[in-house]
Length: 161
Image 1 (tube, rainbow, N blue to C red):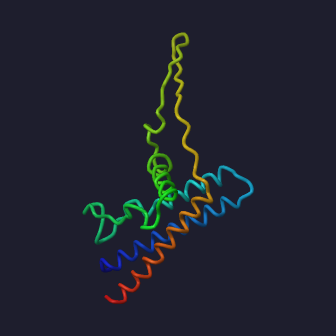
Image 2 (tube, rainbow, N blue to C red; image 1 turned 30 degrees about the horizontal axis):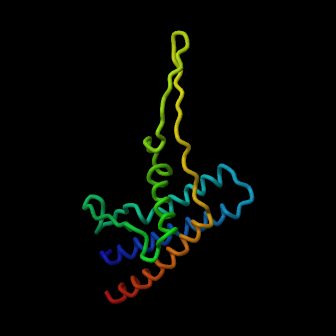
Image 3 (spheres, rainbow, N blue to C red; image 1 turned 120 degrees about the vertical axis):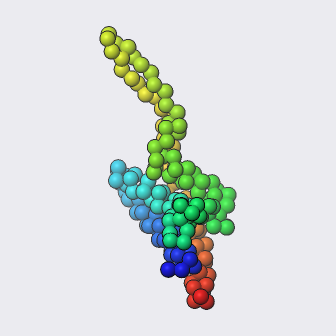
């Protein structure tokens, strides 16, 4: 596989991840009954949304060479409220959904001494709520429109090679 083909494959994988997130969030939004399963599906969809913006190793580009594939920012054309939502989703993914960063919790431990022992009580921040599904769907659709254009250009570049 050439470097150009690998870049195109990465772009196609990004589009696939975003489409996966789009389908899941649409189903969650349409579900009349919210449950632990729909909440887990929504969290997974946000992780899938973030996949294009996290490192992806290939033969020509990878973390060992410190040039892994990833979009540093969303495509040009994502701005304002959509950009803020994008940043919120990535923060959720990096700090809460795919990891469990303790500093986000800002926890305090209190000891209750009883007789010969002590019991620990932990008080921490409530995790942030997940973003509005309709706003996430709109962001994904806008991002996909831009990436579809990029894929068309990538296909033309592959034909020229």
